[in-house]
Image (cartoon, rainbow, N blue to C red; front, top):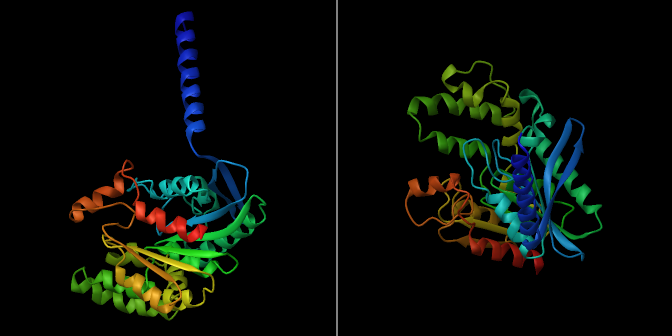
Amino acid sequence: MKKGVIILSIFYLSTLFSFATYHQLLLPYKEEAITLKTATGDIHGTLTLPAGTEKHPVALIIAGSGPTDRNGNSMLTQNDCLKQLAAKLAENKIASVRYDKRGIGESKNAAVKEEDLRIEHYMDDVKSWIKLLKENKQFSDMIIIGHSEGSLIGMVASGSTNKFISIAGTGLPADEILKEQLKQQPQSILDMSVPIIESLKKGIPVKDVNPMLNSLFRPSVQPYMISWFKYNPQEEIKKVKIPVLIIQGTKDIQVSTEDATLLHKANPKSKLVIIENMNHIFKDVAGDEQENIATYSNKSLPINSKLVKEICTFILD
């Protein structure tokens, strides 16, 4: 490499470093890696800390179902909804931890074999995160924020925390939701699926699954479904004795406002907030379903401001 090119490269790298450092100094928070040790491998996350040295409340953010990472993204969706939420919390003097679920992203080495995975693994992970964060003297209150399936996981695991927030949490057991979703498929698919669902609900695996249904009911995933079907969100939220905030958007095409109402009725002391035009990933949608779906892959869109205000007010009150 020529001398001039070397000097130019050093100048370029130094400029990038200076800009990154300057940009970090401008932010009202900092981010650092945090790791949870488990028996099956490390779970990796991001700790977002507000500026200053005083104690802050800390929120554990639990992602929804599927291969969703700490930022709210997957192979098919890139929207940064959870990353944006963490930033907004920090701007309001609230620390947070968000993490890649076991088997996802940097936590892939903590994966459990599909046939061995149960929803309780995720619940136990949350309990372990809570224990780890409560040992940290820089935090005051401990809050759980569960999104989508993370709402159910969070409400079951939230016993030793100070407050619980459900965003887009379902109000019905997973088996009932699955039946409703399958009604959109051809009748033959529904007819084949319902007996399998009912068997799994009873805790009985199904050996002979039509190849057409293998992606949904393959034998290796059935143990997880059996564990998941055992939990009724309405029954679980009744058990939550700490303050509860339930948030639901009217433009959510995955979970309805009726789900939020069911949760609120099951725990009447909870606060229910319905946000107009907010979708499942906290983004504002004015148009049709096509526009709604497009938001799932648009990181530039900010999250709903009322969502941020309601969460921060609830935590800091």
